[in-house]
Amino acid sequence: MSPLRMPLCFLLILFASAQTTNAQEITEQTVHSRKCFVLKSPSVEVSVTEIGGHMAPVTFFRDTDKPVQPYHISPWQDEPESPMPAPVLVSLRGDFFCMPFGGNQAALGKENHPPHGEVAGAPWKLEPSRHAKDVATMVLSFETKVRPGKVTKELSLVDSHNVIYTKHTIEGFEGKVPLGHHATLAMPDKEGSVRLSSSAIRFGMTYPGLFSDPKLKEYQSLLPGEKWTSLSEVPLAWKNQGNADVSRQPGRQGFADLVQIYNESPEKTSGVAWMTATFPDDGYVWFSMKDPSVLNSTVFWMENHGRHGHPWNGRNNCLGLEDVTAYFADGLVASMEANLINQQGIATTVELTKSRPTTINYIQGVARIPDGFDVVTKADFAPGQVTFWCDRQSVIVPVRHEFLRTGKL
Image: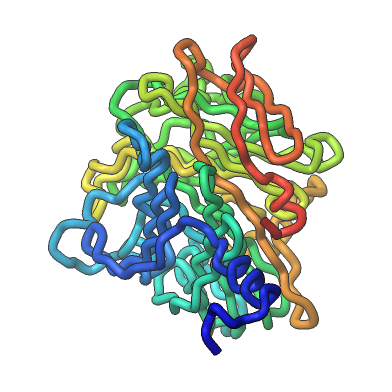
């Protein structure tokens, strides 16, 4: 039938179906020596590695003369191939999903998971993408072997939003597991030039054991196992040296430290927990958002040239702001057993069941800030937007935070 002779209603249906996002089709490219799947919208370009599903580089404000690339790319990515201590280090960059989150040095029966799980260090499969209205979605899938099941990764871009909406759907698994996101930001060289802030927390704690082992040419500066309520008052390991202010990054060059903060309940956070890293010298704030009933804590991996073994060689300067439900970065067994955190009534695992899928919804983005805006003091949520405040200054950011609850855009 000629289009001129089609019924008007049929033409309207065809026209409506053509009104899709301005995002470009997914392409395959080699980015920093790794095969990546790349999705673009007018505002954002996202690269995701085939190996491990690591998300970076990401370019926000790509349609402006001052684009922003906040995520860390490990310094060995463009070097000749060499054996890595763990599969996760092969692609190490940006944000990636971890399950089981942590080192996983201890096996659970016949389950022997690599650090941060198979999903962080093995190939993902590209599935057909989706375009609808102003939303474009990249879809990847992964079938695990150690504990059989399937994980589907969906990364969505909304036209005009400098935001990435991520959903992981976990199917076929049975049992408890620590899991979450491993967002890793690039740090400038200037000491204390990045300012951190979060929604309300119950408390924070420094890693209770030896996180950086001098026998492996690694060094730490914070006092192990200390509990505190402010990022600016974290006890140092050296006697009579007072506290460190971990809200100012990078800090204490030559040391690598780990702390964890535990979010207040959803009833006290309007159902949204958030984390921000403000880069005043560069004029932007990076943010993450989550449902604290699903991901109830954030692990800070403060890597400021503190590791000198292979492949680090003292070169790594990054900050992990890792939104998880887990017991620090110790992995499956430590998170399942009785520990210092779950004994206080805070979950360190998520219960997975074969009878129904589990979804982990997550938001990351970037906003421009005015001069003098240095640290977020509060966040106000309204339908389809959030307002970040720094004293009397504010920035309104278009973001569909309702996605955290509904999984829909």
